[in-house]
Image 1 (cartoon, rainbow, N blue to C red):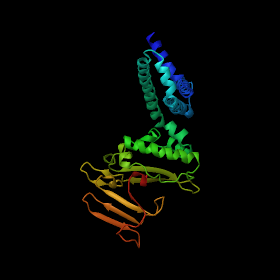
Image 2 (image 1 turned 90 degrees about the horizontal axis):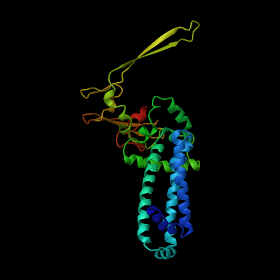
Image 3 (image 1 turned 180 degrees about the horizontal axis):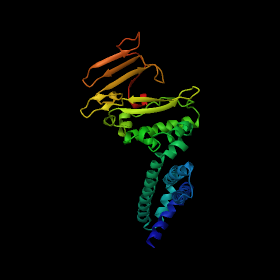
Image 4 (image 1 turned 30 degrees about the vertical axis):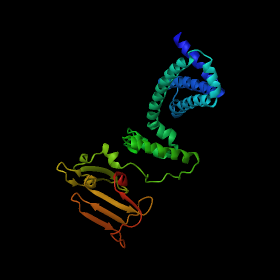
Length: 311
């Protein structure tokens, strides 16, 4: 009875104008749709990338839109609302209680939907099959790569809130580029504005891991009549950082006290006329192409070298 009294006191607010009433209908329909679709999605009765889009993004968005219509209508028709509230005894108290209860419920619903929505937007399914369909070749290559079990966001976003916000803002720009077909074809490389590799790649491939040398055996056959077999033995000096802190081998430059930077003249970073190396002692060496002065650096993109420049 108490719940019925609270609802009966709040109902005049929703029916006081068409806008609020429409908002109540939209919110109710979206809530029912969210519950049903979430159940179907969870038990596997409804799947696919667009199912997740509807469950975790579209329906919560409609739910929020319906909620926004309710106070908007109450504000626009506040004179009519005041008359209805004053006509009911003890209505203001019950209305405040009802608004408080519904607010808590809405916060819970939106929090759960937002949490699941963020997780869905960070999923490989969302990135590869829904959001970034223009990068289908890259997605297919990813599925066959050594990183196939590493989620896209682990490398493209990484931990922390700041880069999460940056990635979503960049994602909005990319959405408009896809909608209006303003993106470049094919997708150019290298990818610009990536998070520094020390904050992403080195979370798994830490410098101290690269040690020693690796023997690689490659067997092949000569293109002669006998199809003569032969073997190539390659000694890969992987190197890295020794336990005493000495950088060695191919990966000597990943030592945190060493910095290799360069200037690129083109977008693909293939024309590099100027390279600077700072060693662990703080000494600097500059390498230049013929005809290029060591100082000042030539005009172009200045970049500190990291993993993606080679890999």
